[in-house]
Length: 326
Image (tube, rainbow, N blue to C red; front, side, top):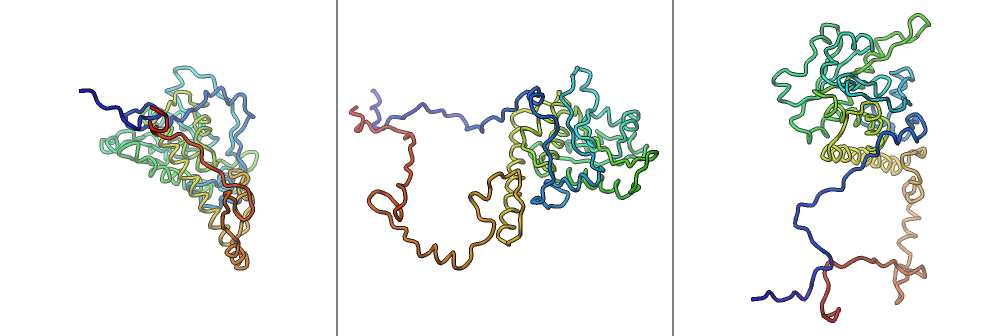
């Protein structure tokens, strides 16, 4: 027996697979060669947070003696470079676990702390350690997660560990540098098994948080110095989610400050924000005037003599055969 034709056929083809989020496309690192050299970092008075999780270039400028901006072009890459560590920021290195156990690298690059980003199974097995760093008097810290999904919660903890160490080294160092004894900021090596997975994600998250940089550009900055970093779609989505969290928290802060009447300087991260939102609360008179406005619509869909309301133009999911003459 034939199945009767539906009176409401589908307007377009349907798929029964589980919906998937859109892919995050990251251009090749050669894209940076076509861009102005240097990382677009500018002190932001709006982002007056602590040192954790938000743009605070004043903090970085202080603890690194103003040496916190990188403008290096993508380096030439060979296969053997994957076993080495690369300098992503003047004070931040990224590499595999073998580098954390290299006395020569730790000494020659002024590393003052190694940070392992590892799986909890590795932690229980006491893997990814660095006895060499401990023997050399170098600080050793870990961020352990049971899976990649826990990285979002771990990012702020890792950022705080890095910043707390930079601050501690700054306060323990002489305040005045000379030609013979220049001031030396802290140096941090972030590592995991390969230097291309969780540790790379931690460095990307640090750049997003501390430099108010979007996820695509932060990934490009890391990949331009360590080409072996290749995030899968799940890791890109996780970093994109963290980027959205940071943006939402910054927006909340802006809103709170506007509502409190605090003076806020325009922020380059939110161009034109005051074009659609007032910086202060409405006065009582303004609120009463708004309540008195006539909001009735006439037959043409106009409000108080204004232009007609915009109508939505979209595609219906189904057709009605009666309307299409079958």
